[in-house]
Length: 175
Ligand SMILES: [Zn+2]
Image 1: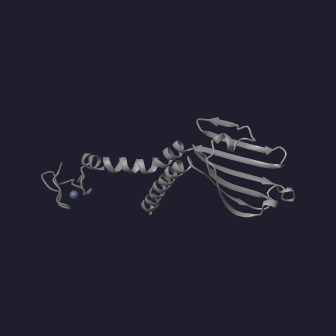
Image 2: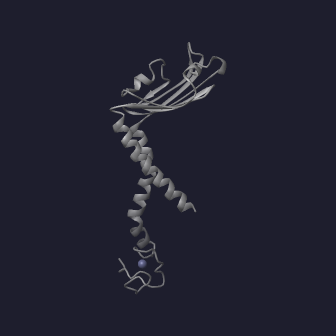
Image 3: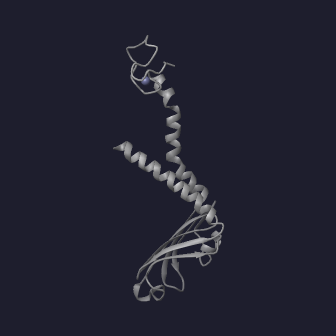
């Protein structure tokens, strides 16, 4: 069961990694802005030229600044945007190596806004961790098995078979 979950997570990481690379390329030509607007809150995600940003905002429904724009799910394609454009009305609290975070009340629109921007390079590193560990473990598995007295090819326990030249389980020559 644990193995199934681990395999699923690894496959998911690989898929997201490929998607992030594709989005990085697309981000040079366009910016997709996907957001869900409700009466009192808004969540959205967009890519900049250099990363992905998640946006969240909430406000008093009575003075909802986006009520007039209509509620629902929207997808807009805009011109490619530098990170600075995401934060043009705000002063980020964190701005380090492409990681940019702003959270606070937006003066003039009476709403709370949270924007988190993660650079593509960081996303790719994070998404590569699990598949990377799995790959390294796979490469080093034969050496690890041999060292512990198991068949390097199939992992069969060769303890008590000191003279066998081949693995009785799979027939591989002992290294
Ligand atoms: Zn074997």
